[in-house]
Image 1 (tube, rainbow, N blue to C red):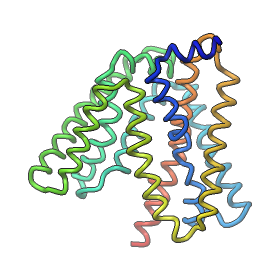
Image 2 (image 1 turned 120 degrees about the vertical axis):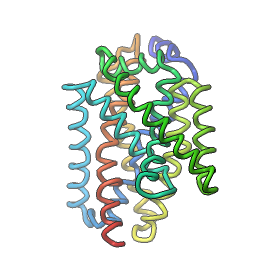
Image 3 (image 1 turned 60 degrees about the vertical axis):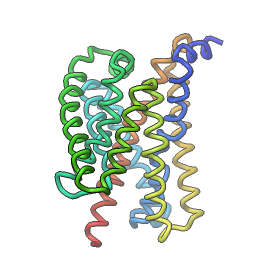
Length: 279
């Protein structure tokens, strides 16, 4: 009962948001094994084992870095998340305009939610680093200026080019959502229903030509189950069952950070470089 009561202290909407992040966010890289097969990185059991070891090793390095330098790790996680989210959502322009759209999409989800709900987000940040959050907010305040400029650039482009209208409308709607709903729910809505949905659709359309659908399904089940089991073990080992909220936050977001790094290396690094090489 203490565990249930402690979780309910987080609030129903926050719990819904956390559930979405855990169920869909942590296995965000569920297709990464199939992507590795598509890229020719995995061709047999030994190369799959090597891929998994490297993937888990990179995730472990992130957790280790977080334990040593939590504030710096949180800042880097926020920055790379902005870039990764934005890169997945941007669809217009080239060069500086492409970067502006990337920053607008990814930045609004991170700094927008943070600025709209400073006190609640500050509490989450404190749970994650267990120390003063001033330096984190300093970086967020600087990034906020850049994101405002990027959003303004997208709106200005929409005035001149109709294809940017959908981008501007999406940014407006998401901005309203971020302002109105609790921060964890707002992030879950974006991460699960917008970014992850696009990511899965794009990746699936790319890899299904070279990887059998049964293999894709098996890889997705494997990576998803592994991420849930790891999160469950971590919670069981470290949770204070009388006050589980802080532990749930740490496991969810530090786990998300740990999985984001190898996922980015594969998707934003190796996969994009190979696509460029083909072109």
